[in-house]
Image (cartoon, rainbow, N blue to C red; front, side, top):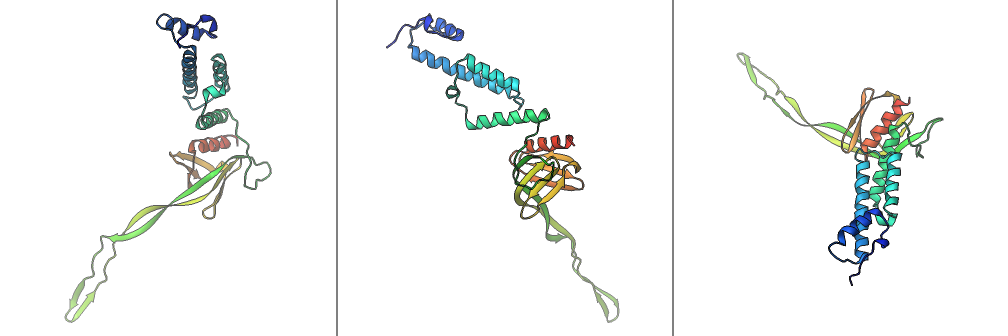
Length: 239
């Protein structure tokens, strides 16, 4: 049944505005209007959330503002129903902001650390190594016979020509750890330990990070290369 909705039943100014506009045209069940208002409030919250993290950072002020918005709109966690991926994203952008402000995480490590060594990052990773294979030769010549005197002929050997090569990649699974002192890759093959202060350059890719360490270049495939690069750069800056 359709019932008349009274302004006294409305709690917020936003609801009053919506009710006053609707009451001029139709009579609607209160439960329907409440649901409509709640859905609009949730949409507004997510709009503000997306605005806050547009720069891929979440500051304490932005978190407080989002909390205040939820409170003013009378939204519970059940109303917002934030997915696990959204929560993970917010936590990541919160960490990005903390790193920007000089804070590095202090986490447990599977690596035996030295005195005063702090682990900032540890995750599964693959070391990618580019190899070169000879698949053939090109530009060769066949051997020839040269007659240099009557009854005397010299046979020359064939020239093999220049090698034709093809590059291919091999991946070596392991665990990559970043501390305030070292970059450590634990692997059954191609593992390495590199002092953090000798890193001279980082090259970002969509699925990995290239690390120039002195004369050596390590190409690491990992889940979040941006986070890895930020932690390495911040660790170096603290030296």
